[in-house]
Length: 120
Image (cartoon, rainbow, N blue to C red; front, side, top):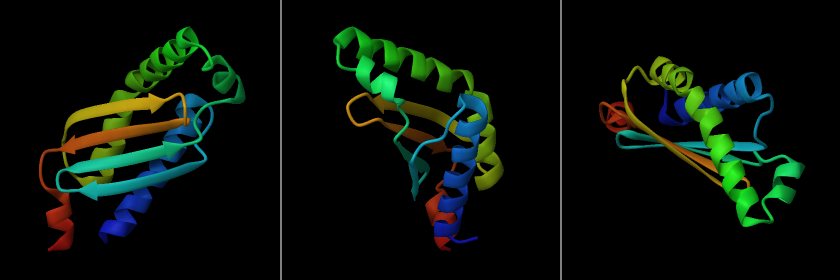
């Protein structure tokens, strides 16, 4: 499998996970493999009511807290998806959400340099 094909498969799998686990998927997903990291950008993840709620500081804080707890509760499943697709162990997982743009970033740090493996 090429680097581009694997990136597309990861995007597809994470979109499916969102739909099944969170009840709705993002509008756009882009995955990039860089050295030993998998970067995933998910756009359009907030609902219209969450955009409205994000107009206040308390609302933004609430959205970030709840959305991060939801993703954290599915962390094992997310790690399994990435491991199954890449064949690599996950060392760390980081995520954050922008209540301004409705974008989530996920970063998976792998046990080896996957980009180098795919390029050789």
